[in-house]
Amino acid sequence: MRRSEHSAAARRDELLGRTRAISLAVVGTAAAASLGLGTVFAHETPGHASTVAPAPPPAATPSPPAATPSPPAAPRSAGSSSGATPHHTSQQKRLTTPPQQPAPTPAAPQVSSGGS
Amino acid sequence: MAFWYATRAFGVVALVFLTATVVLGIAGTARFAAHGLPRVVTAGLHRNLSLLVLALVALHVLTTVADGYAPIGFASAVVPFDSAYRPLWLGLGAVAFDMLLAVAVTSLLRDRLSCRTWRGVHWLAYACWPVALWHSLGTGTDSKVPWLLTLDALCAAGVVGAVWWRLSLMAPGPGRTAALAASAVLPLATGILVYIGPLQPHWAERAGTPPAILHSRASRSGGRR
Image (cartoon, rainbow over all chains, first blue to last red; front, side):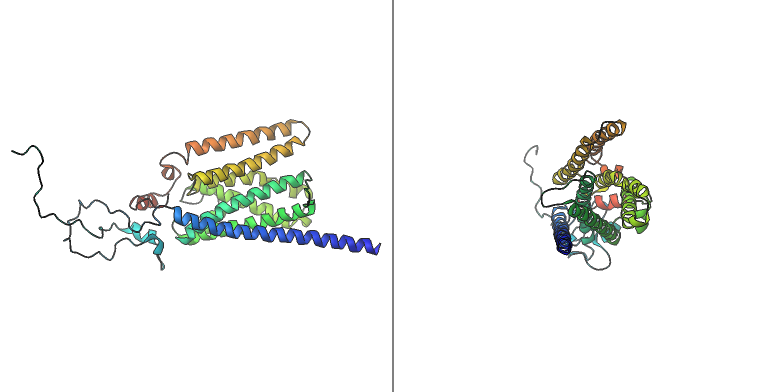
């Protein structure tokens, strides 16, 4: 009688141990899957890898000289946002000028046809 | 930004493990026991998985609120259709979370409840799963991604297969017929929802994304979809 009780308790402990082991493996899998998926999302999302958002057409604002350095409010790298303000909130407040304006061409435009 | 990636990852993983929990629960109702997996093990796994799902959903909510990109507060996680961000689809997530909480709490208090009450609340798990799936499809940033759609389809196939297997063990009757019909109609409706919803252009706008977020998105090159 005592032997059967002992074997039943051993069997119960073995089953509980198996449940615990599988559960721990599942938790580890969930943690690894969360980390992996987060990494995949971080690499797949457009805009995260790109460093500069395209600027709006500069038709409304006068163009600064070509030698003007990049303004401090130029878009930052999406992945390098830090501090209290996330990059997406800082970008949605104002439109920024492009970091470099196209250099003006000194030569006159060439006419390939239709000139007289 | 890291919070946004984390919340999406936790959401996807929570859905997968919720699927596993539901399948294990259905298997448990049929007294299923595999070689090396006696019922006491599957029942313990079912319980531990459901607690894991709760933890994952809690992390999903925490990271969503902490991110601050979308105007979502803690109240929106439990009060359905309260959010300004995709109210219907986020509200479905709140409904699923509430049902999951009810199922988990009544299971933890099972000794103090009547079997009838516990079982009645536990039936919410069958409703919780499709609602969570619709929340994922409707508000998920990555609803259009093929491999995630495949994952959703696999989850749906797992649950529908388990339900059909369970129903095949039941005696014929009106309840079984209704359950079979529901398990056939719901996946079809979900497929139609995906086709006319997230797979179509301008879904973010139609889903109820606030204009401020849409405009900020448009000012960036391919921000969050």
